Amino acid sequence: MFFDDLPGIGRTLIVGTLAYAGLVALVRLAGKRTLGKMNAFDLIVTVALGSTLATVLLSQDVALAEGLTAFAVLIGLQMAITWLSVRTRVVPSLVKSEPTLLVFRGRQLDAALLEQRVSDAEVLQAIRQRGFGSLADVHAVVLETDGSLSVIGQAPVGGESALRNVAGFDDH
Image (cartoon, rainbow, N blue to C red):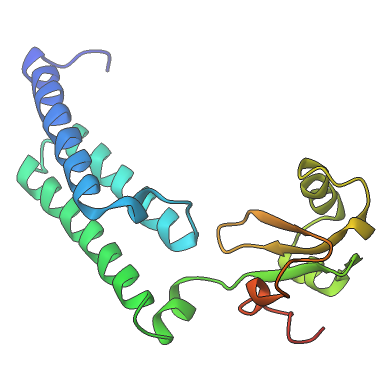
């Protein structure tokens, strides 16, 4: 149907504006980590927030207060999980993957590439984007928990301490 009634449109405008303002306020209260680079856990929360916002906007069966409560619950749970993630060893392993070594000392680690479903072309693109012309110029490429590729050039200053929590580093 193209148009039901004017009060429905008015409700959508009012509730939409208030729900949006409430969501922005809650995200700001939650802090910078809520909007940081996303891992799988963050993506789920973001999709859930978007779905909740759409439901509040379009369903007359869901009151604004219920929608704002749902936002608060989702953001509160995300804050609790991130709080526990920095204070325990168990929670991070449950909600986040660990970074994975894909290239080490100029050699591609083919088993890691296959396991992580990363193509040779993606690794080479990341290396080029960092300004390296050869794989031999690269000390390490790491697939980070957010899906990005970090590239470390040869002869890292201070050793390899930045790689200590990377899956596959201990094997090399």
